[in-house]
Image (tube, rainbow, N blue to C red):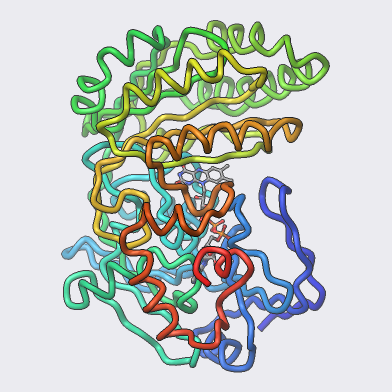
Length: 431
Ligand SMILES: Cc1cc2nc3c(=O)[nH]c(=O)nc-3n(C[C@H](O)[C@H](O)[C@H](O)COP(=O)(O)OP(=O)(O)OC[C@H]3O[C@@H](n4cnc5c(N)ncnc54)[C@H](O)[C@@H]3O)c2cc1C
């Protein structure tokens, strides 16, 4: 097993870092069990794509990049069993070659599967739950080194408690996922008036398989993404994808960000230019994972909260008003997505159909003020924060919003009585 001492870890966004005394990269389950037994304080890090302090640890950090194999594909049952260090892009490529796909995805594919499951990572589509809902069975190496097998039906109650585990119940060591036959998405992307979209929001949300909005603040337009599942053949061009998605949108956007950093008041004009000139209407059919995954974003800050879908229109109108009336100057999308209710104790979609509202900005300057203002509104609307993104931890508030938080904590204390898998972030939430 590869071991590095005094390993410097940075989150993807470089907003947090730590030096771990030991950084382990096991290649077998036996090695995982061995290191769980011998260390008194451990956190696992997937790809470090969380903004929150969820991975930070100064003793032992474990990374499963070398524990990422596909173990079995059962075509009849439409299930795949993998080692959980596998990245989503590796899994997507493998499944596509075999004629299968994941039923839903978020906006990027760099994360590890276990990281995605542990934080209730989600995509968009009101008929689709968070990505962890695709898990049929998983095994966790508990803090005492025992292997714990959890099946979604056979062990329903514990499975629902443990699945979104924030990395504090042990190390996920194997995952079986339900998969679907490969499919295409018909991507219809348009630019519309924010207020008009809000007026017909229900129609859009309920009438589209995967619907999401990107709002660049300070302007009246919003980018509307409608993805419909289809078996019709692909008609997108690789050259268009390279030119528009990989080259122009990435490089022009970075240039405009740099210009907007010279004078933050120019951002309104820049956002308008971006949306009107570079967010061209699209009508294309492409493999599902290639549509779900967006062009590589620049480093930025994110907070994202889930709300009861019933408050959608009021929430979005109020958020727009708040931003427009404020002195915040935002150079990045605000993202609006939807997920179906689930039964996972720590999922922000626990027992409620959810609208997600994400405040993002590619600027550290003024970020804390934006985060604070966002949180005032989010709390007014009983929002639940995404565990992998930034939020100020308020234990009492979280307990009120996550009705199963205490049950999860009881399980955590039972499985990990010495707090081997706790860190500052976990202690702030639970202790
Ligand atoms: C550019 C970008 C885009 C994003 N897009 C989306 C999106 O579309 N939708 C969304 O919901 N989120 C999104 N996120 C957030 C991201 O999906 C989550 O934060 C996710 O957890 C990151 O995966 P990771 O592998 O990097 O996990 P990490 O951030 O490294 O870890 C997250 C948690 O998983 C735990 N963990 C990892 N592996 C294991 C294991 N084997 N056993 C037990 N616990 C484990 C860690 O301990 C930690 O608690 C995005 C993040 C970035 C940076």
